[in-house]
Image 1 (cartoon, rainbow over the protein chains, first blue to last red):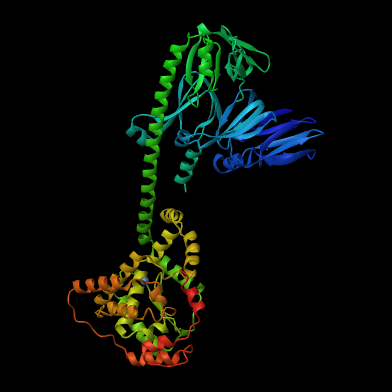
Image 2 (image 1 turned 120 degrees about the horizontal axis):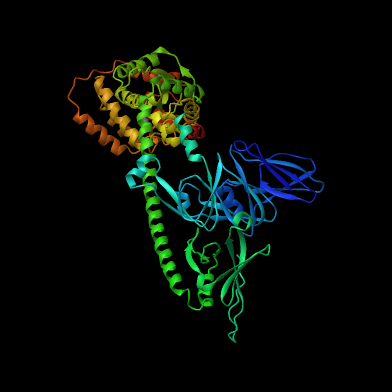
Length: 217
Length: 416
Ligand SMILES: [Zn+2]
């Protein structure tokens, strides 16, 4: 299967050229267009409980679509908000994705939803997150641009900007400065991430968008 | 994470233990891979699915605990070019055992550091969640209070539009009476009170409806509706004026709008704050046509009672009609549960009698001017006009008691 991320970085979409026998899994309503030779099966995204959790708390849809083909064909997948996408190849390692970031993956990739913990809620990242593991490519997206950092030490990330991180990354939520400077500077809470491992950041946060929208209503 | 745990067998022969985990190394494509870690005699050996293998002798091991869960054990070689890690719960213990005590000190210090951090993290999280909850709760109440204030600052024309729209949409229980012998005396009461309304620019528009239902209400903006049943039930013009003043007070105090903003909740409060009234109008029309017009909060009822007394007093109408009305309602309540809509939406007479009487006592003495109407003529006119009543009677008690009203019809009206 050939994959190409097009129209980067603002309106990135994923174009997949499927060979006979190939299949790919994507978010339920992510398909923009596809060849008529491709079959689409909707299936539960993991177990029922997992799916419900994902649906209501993880921002992912309850169903995923499995696209497969006997003859080969083309498939284009988009994400609901403008922004960049990136590809990650798993080789037995895992990655945590923030709610809503997942776009598509190859069949060898396992999707699991997990409780992200209080600190991620505080950090503005949502209570649940998706864990991708196994073997194969995973495509995920962000609101705005995505950039990745390989970190070995501590890094400070503004809340709401963390899109993905490896399980080896330690995450702590804390104040940017003292209590007062934190609350009044607008840079109140920050997420402290600690290596080793890789983090993916989005250049804009949804909170920022919401604040901007409210200010212009 | 499936891990193959095998412990030393009974002969003490060391059997390979495998743990699933990962490796970071620059030579790997993407710099990382999942691995199976084996604890061998003198070293850890990690192998990837692609067949790459990484080895760290136990004496070189630099241990660190961390990762997302705070329970991942990292092991690095001397030049830190290879990092192996596993989150398997058995891994630290097995590693310590396999290394034969060489890593015990490192492991112990890392474990105690990790414990301290997780405790600090939990305390911080808890404190922050508690603080956030407090902020959210106060914000919520702040917005509600703000909405009430905003309600008061909205133009009265909004109330009027709202009231007119609601009146059009409301089911009437009878035909409107245009007979000036009925409407004019009541209009004169409304006019006297209107001169002393708290809000400027409210036009009180009177509708008298031919219905045995003992009720009256005033829609937002001043659309005043009086049922003939109320006129029949009242014992004096003062009591009638008391009900009218109370209902007018609901309008002048703009209870309808605050009720809407409270019922519709935060959304309405926010849209009121940003000045979007179109959505509120639509919802409010619905709200008032749902026959819940007379269901105000207990606090609003008390406010309307006291404001009614103030208006009566200001208009030189004897406000004692108010407590005496409640006395009447208290007595009759048991006998006339169906017809007394006004009573059922305005409960707890004893405290209302007390509160209004207290207010009257505190008002400066003033010569009251009697209400200029022919009470008996009005009552007989109303009784004569009524098409719903078979028995025409001058006695208010009887006429109400005798009134035959379909209870189901009333229940709808009284739905809230
Ligand atoms: Zn009332």
